[in-house]
Amino acid sequence: MASPPRPTDEANAWKRCSTCRGPIAFGATYYVCSVSTCNRKRTAYRFCSVECWEEHLPLMRHREAWAVEEKAPSRDAWAQQVEGPAPVPAKRPTLELAPVTEAVPAPVRDSGVPRRRIRVGSAPQPAAPEPGGDVLVVVSRLKSLVKDRWGMNTSDAVMDVLSDHIRSLCRRAADNARADGRKTVMDRDFEFLRRR
Image 1 (tube, helix red, strand yellow):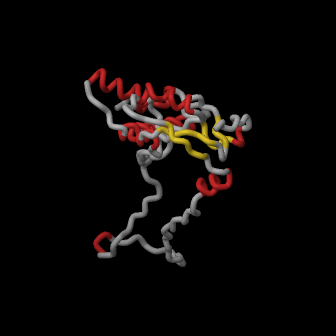
Image 2 (cartoon, rainbow, N blue to C red; image 1 turned 60 degrees about the vertical axis):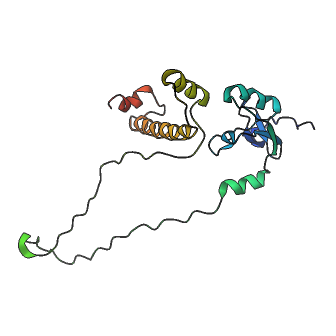
Image 3 (spheres, helix red, strand yellow; image 1 turned 120 degrees about the vertical axis):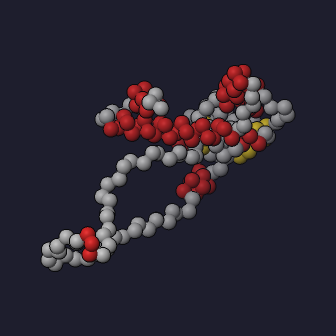
């Protein structure tokens, strides 16, 4: 069965092929790898043709694999999937203050009256890792580096951890560029890595 022609309009693209980066249209036939590590949420390799699927085999070094035909969702089904349920707004704690009608003298230390401190500003907290999204490292090259240099295998779960760490570092560098009044992240925005 011949697959439909590739769309030229970006609005018709559901996802892009993991090999040729060509668009996969809504409702079009596409292919996934039968190996489970290629179908994880953060990896999610998708191919527009069996030929593109075959090109990823030498990189992944599968012992046994085949292309599985899938159908892309319609535009409406994808919109509902992306939107998901409406988020429940979190309740913000409120601070109730008693109205001041007259000047109150400062409390005496030994009066036994408990005093309360309210912190107006706080020191900036380190950015938490930002989970989610695609894998940001070249899996085959990282695995071969660890194998060649240290003679060890690398778990696929390492890619997710490294990608989250890279996202966190990029967010911090983007904050540095923004604080400097720039819209371009530069190498000097990663200076905090050298200070460790």
